[in-house]
Each structure stands twice: as structure tokens, then as C-alpha cells.
Image 1 (cartoon, rainbow, N blue to C red):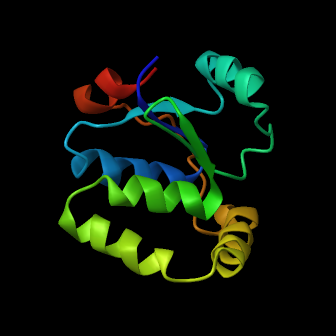
Image 2 (tube, helix red, strand yellow; image 1 turned 90 degrees about the vertical axis):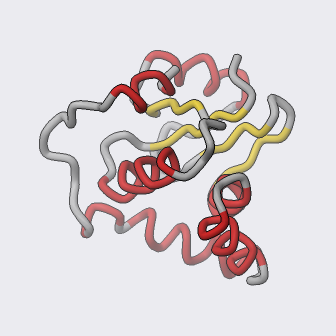
Image 3 (cartoon, rainbow, N blue to C red; image 1 turned 135 degrees about the vertical axis):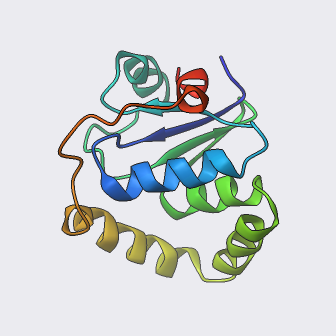
Length: 130
């Protein structure tokens, strides 16, 4: 298994956009899994993950498992300086506030758009997909 894995909703415009930005700024640290893929089932069963597609998960160094705003922060902290700075700032807010906002956005994420077509992943995305 890869050591830093992001598990995300591949049908969500926000999630896909986030993954694209992270991959451009992560120094090749992350592998990715779409929650609608067969690979997800292995992680879902092992870590008792939800099937609602309303959260992002992050498995850090094969040891620590994060979800919701904590996952976003941990991912950002591993990226280049601009994203790391954003992670530090977001981390200053109380977890209850961060997760409340995360859940609100997550439940209404398709307001921002839904993937209507299958995007053709570039080679960088393909090499990172589990």
C-alpha cells in the first residue's frame, strides 16, 4: 500500500478540482483513490469508512487516518508553501467549526457543479491512482 493516500469523491467537481491542485503542488507525495472505484472497497472495509461520498479521507504514512477538515489540513500541510500556509491558517479554527463548515459544503457540493462527463486523466493522475 502507498504511504499517503487521498480517498475522494470522483464525481464531485470540488473534490476533483482539489485533487488536481494538490497533485500539482505535492512533490509527488500522494496516491489517490476514487470512492467509486474497486480499490476503495479494500480501504472501506479495513477502516470502516462511510459509503455516502460526503467526506474526503487521508491515510498518512500508513498509520494515521483523517477525515473531513482534518484530512484537508493534513493534505495541505504536506504540500508546497502556499498550500501549507493555508493548512496552518485553517488549523487555527476549532475542529467543530471546521467540520461544521465542511459538512455544509459537502452536503451542498453539487451546487458548484457535477462532473457531467468523464475527464481524461493526464499521465500524472494515472500514475497516482490506486
